[in-house]
Amino acid sequence: MNVSFETGMAVLEALAGSNCPKTIDQLSSQTNFEQDIFHETLRVLETSRYISISRQSEVVTLSPKLWSLGFCSKAKADLKRVADHHLSELVMSTGESACLAIIADREIVIAAGLNVPGPTGAEFEVGTKLPAQACAAGKAILAFHPLDMIGELEESALATIPAQHDPGAFRRELEEIRLQGYAAHWSECDGRKCEIAAPIRCVDGVIEAAVCISGSPSRLTWEAIPAMAERVLAAAERISRELNYPRTEAA
Image (cartoon, rainbow, N blue to C red; front, top):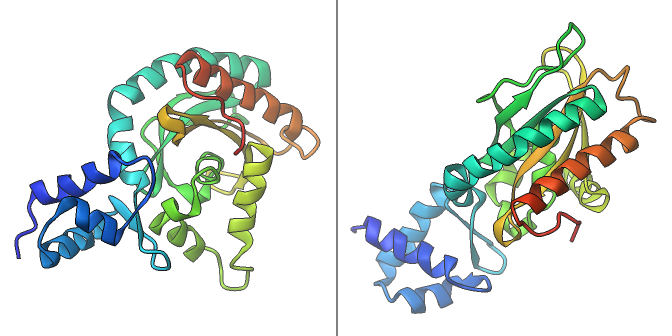
């Protein structure tokens, strides 16, 4: 059985060119491949995490991994260029370190960072990768992905929750983030710190990036978080507008 680059691209282009999700049968009719080659192509694309398939409805959708390939080229360069200025303003207005983060497959990558000097300042190192479910930026992005598009990304996130915890807690947290528009996360990495992140809505409404600040919980207290979050949300909105992206309001 020969699953070629051409057959894989034909399936991806059929999905990308559609205004609505397609079922396996609809996609099979459109691509017109032999059934064994078609189903093996779907298997390879799903295993490689370029598509997601709903086992209940048999709906096939493009995955975040595929979106990230195009996003990480010109869009990433444009986004970083625009974000740099707003990160500087965010650091000045909050007194905390700030970064631009993007999602690539199941990880968050720091694309740009501006750190506050001093022993109590959090540090963002460009190129650092973190599990998407383990940081505020990742949660802020995941919360705005439809559940049928999260696929393995969501399953991986849920799998990291300790057995003694409610397995639905992570999904409820994403729902709350979607409602309030931002994520707050307490991290134990490199010392305890608090992170606040807001999503940047990109072309076609897809959310693949976020703005995040990080600092000591002694400064980013529960009482301080709402006011700080407003500044992070404003920075994300300004970046989106400058790049002519749609508004980042919750759907």
